[in-house]
Amino acid sequence: MEAAELTGVEVIDLASTPLRELNRRLHELAGGARSWRIVNPNGAHAVACGLDAEIDVEIQGHVGYYCAGMNKLATVRVHGNAGPGVAENLMSGEVVVAGSASQSAGASGRGGLLVVHGDASARCGISMKGIDIVVRGSVGHLSAFMAQTGRLVVCGDAGEALGDSIYEARLYVRGEVASLGADCVEKDMRGEHLAELSDLLARAGLDDVGAAEFRRGSPACASRICTTGTSSPRSSARLGRASTTFAASARNGGCRTSTISSSSGRACRAIHSRATASAVAQMSSWGRASPSSRSS
Image (spheres, helix red, strand yellow):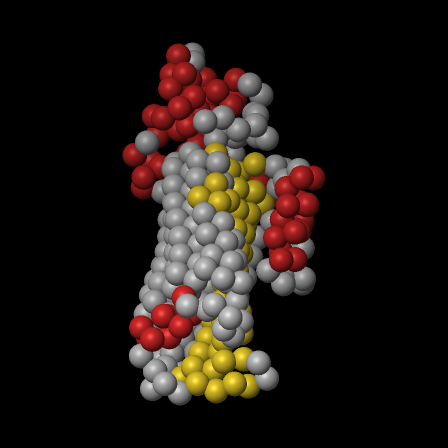
């Protein structure tokens, strides 16, 4: 194995060191180095997976799938792009990608912070369970799909069906959203949300981005649904369920800042048919709302 000590940092060259050997050494750290630099990763898969110690790992180059998966406590920085599933099932610690990330970044993460300074592809934050994800660029379709808890911050745009089947997670988007998925709606930004978002941006090192520039998405109910474009195919297929929920919103005077569980949609089916028809008609026009109407 080629390893060298450089100002207290252990350097491992994956061009000559087997990946299995690298990960074994990272897992057996008793009394060992606390700072590591990995060079020549050349798109290797599963680099620095399953870490369970407060160490710093710098990866100089691009990595393949599942980099830093199941990480606890460690800080992993990728100076390049990352393949599918980066920081998958992240438990704690921090993973920073200097470039862009492929699909399913931060999937099923239960804690910690994932920062992507480029773009993230489809299904970013899918089934997130407490992880915080900050993307400086844009995210692809079905991001935050079935997001249970945690926060997703997107400084760019978001693709179709954002937050489809969302549970209790919070979504913050600075740019445009192609469409929101079923159960996800836009809500007002209150003081506590601005404070929460400001803290997340500071932790991600994005000091040049202001929290006031974002909008918030969360579970229904609300009086608005889409920012741009039309509703997603899955959302359209569940129009009956959505229409009763938004009819309840209209009847209650547009409860944009309240949150009710998805199961409460069943109770809305007894609402008067005229309110339901009004909500359905409103849904058909939300997708083409003007910027001024979205900010009102």
